[in-house]
Amino acid sequence: MDNQTLFKANIIDLLGLQNLPEEQKARLLQRMSQAVQDRISDRVASKMNDAQRTEMDKLLAQNASPEQIDVFMKQAVPDFEEIAAEELLKFKQEMKENTDAVRSMIAE
Image (cartoon, rainbow, N blue to C red; front, side):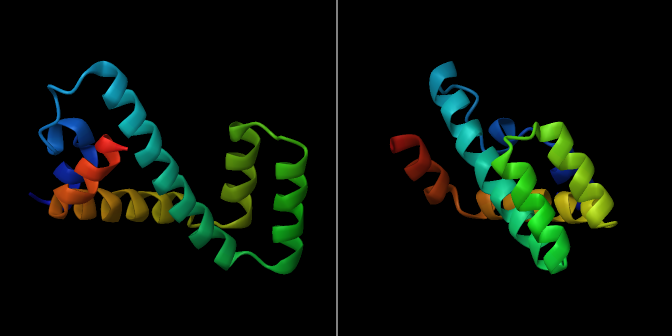
């Protein structure tokens, strides 16, 4: 499967988990989304200078909306979109290669 197809693929379909109960799908998607967001945040933070990290911390302390945080990250790190796409693609590749990890997510 090429990267473009993998990037666009629905992770549930990609992993053959279409028959999971909706509640389990939702829980799995939530955990996967959080994992990808954490990866993106870590990578983006590593590209920020101290002033940008301080500003980001302020936004988080103020419970800024996801949209506000997104705007800030795009301004602070010009290649934010590329980083996000790369991390999503890497995550999907890892999940596809390691279905045991997915199954353990489902069991918890």
